[in-house]
Each structure stands twice: as C-alpha cells, then as structure tokens.
Image 1 (cartoon, helix red, strand yellow):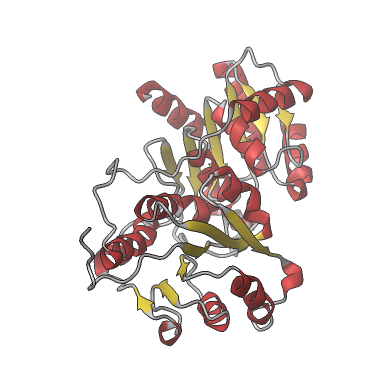
Image 2 (tube, helix red, strand yellow):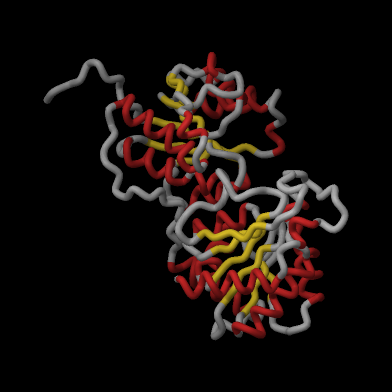
Length: 359
C-alpha cells in the first residue's frame, strides 16, 4: 500500500459548527453533503442551536448533535459553557460553517487540534486551517461560499473526487411516514385533499418589513380558490397564529385552513412537499420549501434576491419596487410599505400560473 507522507492524516471525528438560521442551514446543505462524501469514514457531530435539531436530524447527515439554547448564555459566556461538551467529543477537526469569532474561540478553548474555516471576523489567529476567501466565492450565491470550505478541505487532505452531480442539492428526503402524517394533519384541520394544495407562509420572525401585507395574502388566497380550485393552507410558527387567523378572517371565500403552531419544521416540509406550490415571504419557510423539493415563489421587497435567496431549480421570485428599496430594515420606515404594496395579488397569481405552466 502506498502512503503519501506529505498529506495530513484524514480526520475521523469531525464536529461541524452549523449556522444559526433555517435558511442558512438549508443553503449549507450541499456543503454538509459534500463533507460526508469526501470524509466517508468520519463520525460527524453537528453543533447547532437547539431550534434546528429537528431539521438537521432530518438530513440524516449527523451521527450526533450538540446543541445550545438561550440558557447557554450570550457570546461572552457560551464559549466557556460549550467547551466541555466539545472537549468530551474527542474531535480531531472542527469545521466552522458559521462565520463568527465565537465559534472559533470555543473550538480553541476546547483544544480541538484542527480548526478550519474562513479567517473572517478577526478569528484568523484562532484557526490553524484557514480557508482562503476567494473573490469568486464572495461574488456568487452563498451556497458556493460553504462549498468553498469543502473544496479546500478535500484538496488539503487529498480526498477530493468528482462530484456525483454538478448542481448543488439543497433537498432533504422526507420519509413516507412523515408524508402520511402530514396528510392526516391536513385532513384533521379540514383540508380537502381532493384539491391542489397551495401553502402560504405570511410570517417573518426576523423582519416585519419582509411581510407582504396580510390583506394581500387574503386576496391571493381568495384568487387561488376561485381561479385554481385550490386548497389554501397557511403555515407558520406558533407566534404567527394570530397573524394567520387575521388573514383568514379577511378572506371572502371559505375553505382556507391554518397549521400555524400545529406543524413543526419537518411536518411543515412534508406539507410543502405535497403542495402544488409554496408562496412565502423572504424567510426560512421559502428555504424549507426548497429543502422539501416543492416549487416555491418568494416575495421580495426590502431585500433583494441575491446571495441568500432560496437556491435550486424549483425556486422562483417576485420582486417589489420602491425608491427606498432595498433598505433591509426590520420595520418599514416609510408610510404604506411601498416596496411590498407594489406587488399586487393579481400579479402574484399571474406569476404562479406562469411558473406552473412551465413546470
């Protein structure tokens, strides 16, 4: 057997610091899949916020999960509380997908021998395997930002090989059991599964300005039922229950149902998978739809569809326009929310029909 003494030893126990948000987690899935491919014999532990455990577990990429929540303290205290959990793992490499000083500092405190990531946010001195941040990576979709890390690691350890597919894949396989449970859940809330399901996601936890007006979602729901014979299903987090109930109360055509607070992340993905289309604000739900292999139309207003837009062949956008956009504010500072109100429900319906005709 030939041994390449110039190559570093291939790690066997790897901890991956994942991202903090649903959308970023889905965008980083191609990189996570690539890590499993270039280190096929390694044991992978994912280090993530507690709220993402079900999503990461659904990917079947993690052999183990280390999580933290609000009780772990902020950026000043959390590294000291997390280092013991990491130290117990016996890891020989930490791969930092999340781009923050804290993750590098925590890995250094835990004395993980190899700490790999981009040397951004002043964390370069804490990393001993620094991934060059190339200009072509900076200027393209964020899915390639994460893949830049895996490309570097594959070359560094000599484990690179041609990819099975040249197109990054953000999808997650959903089990038949999950799909069956989703159908039961829809039936339980009164959905007519003899109709085409359209899932609407009107919330946005991290930005009120990203929300298309509730009355527009209500009008769109009416149009989908009248024009397309749709079964309209609203999806949302528990804290968005009131928002969605208010939207349904504004609808003139009966039949829409709400799963707000009744479906967790994976159950929502199963519903999306069985939907003819998902229509969402620029939030995590749009990325979940891509992960569920559903056709999704994302409404953009105060943000632009760019490096962090839902990624994949089933992802589509409709962009609002206003002189003040994009502003990326949490709340719209302009009376009337012009960027979002520039997108009429009839225009969204027309875009839906155009996309479905192509597919």
